[in-house]
Length: 556
Image 1 (tube, rainbow, N blue to C red):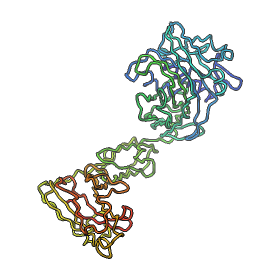
Image 2: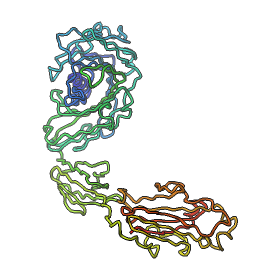
Image 3: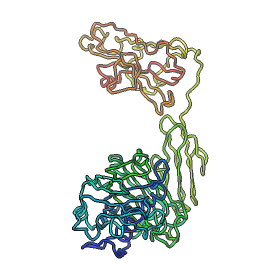
Image 4: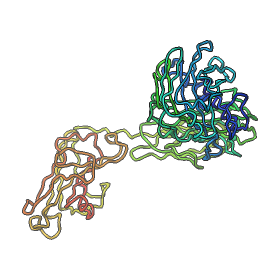
């Protein structure tokens, strides 16, 4: 299988460099096309590390692939152009060269490809392999598969439908239907710079390669993302990585870093990424053999290793601790957050700033920076910095300690803009921190101006009472300060909208005094700093608009 991956790239590389195919390579009326087996450098590199291995770590004994491919080339950070090569491939790998030749059949326009079709017999191809032990069988008179200059031409010769591949008497019937070509792959690189359609990098710099998202990842029988690098003569595999949705369902992209000195100055390389949608799968990736029908997109780009290019070095930020926060850099490049690694010119001065989220604190730097202030770096080599954010531990109190009286003024509370009169509220706190009872008596005759509650008549009808608690960050393990509400059920809940009322529809001629039991026999040792509020209004919106609420107690 490994060669199957490599040879497709060789074909793509010839298109990229202008080299024409060798004798026997399929040509059409528009341009010479070299489709040397069906996969790409990306797949080849990925295969070198993982693709030829089952997820359990067992080398595939036999892999059958029926594939259609659209190829792209990338010449800038954002420019991905469709290459004039569309491929159809039937490949069998892991089968001895002395075996009976596999055969394939299906919706093939045999008259249009008669000289290539070879009566459906696959051909052993060992001449175009960098690892002969993994040479394999391919369709075509020399096992080089088919290339067309347009997708229309490809589809006119190889239609949608069921392709049957027979290997040593075993039949694989694979449905290649739906034209489920993945979105065009795009490479994002860090470590060098684009110049004249190539990515130029100093060999002493690391190179980080990240693919864009495979948008349909996980929507087929299986899906795969792979990327990698290979020498421009296609003889040396550099490195790569790949993943299947069935094994790694979380990420729909891949990233890989090639360390400094991977490349040799004065030489060129290819780097690419491949998205594969397996629309049919016979067997599975955990077995010793399987057959797959796939639609694939490849993007290939050129790397130039230039020792005179600026030397780039990597800066990596790692976040640790029980809390959360972000690390940003000046100049820009790090926003960690999401971007925790960048490369800069050797000798660059970078300042890192750590900002904890609400409820967390910044504990300090480790690695190539120390202290708790900003981190000032002069970067001349690979630099690694760890930023630690922690959630402050809860305050430990004595449960037999008597509860404190309510604060004397509203300035003790976080929310201090309430307009409910002081005389309208009486708070009583009794017991201990391990067994606390807090009641609030609301004198409705003093909540509304213009007389007692009963005297308000129709204007008093339909008023509600609201009870809210503000629990500070770190308490109960909360990452940030959080509001809770006490509804009529008596069960505290996270504040919602609208705010659930503690008591509703207070009608005229009702008593002027309402007693609210906020806490009853409650252990508040883990709630130190929690603030309690009471509000009154025809709705939560009306209450908040006029500010008819106030703080009534604080656990301390």
